Amino acid sequence: MRNISIINLAFIIKALNQSKSIFWQIDKNVNTKSDHKVILFSIQSEGNLVENLLKKIPYNLKKADWKEFDRELKDSSN
Image (cartoon, rainbow, N blue to C red):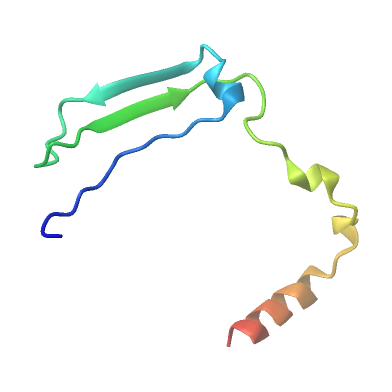
């Protein structure tokens, strides 16, 4: 294979796709020096886009020993 081909893909979840709050446009002001174009998009939502998993944690994070956690984290990274 002499030439490499890169496919540009964009994925979206079904819940956002059904929304009318997604806006796409090609930025013609950016020269990528290739046949690829810069695509700008924005998503406007009134609610959370992803589920906040911290609300489902069965642990009481207020009781955590954060100084000990920080010390352990630093020790394990050395």
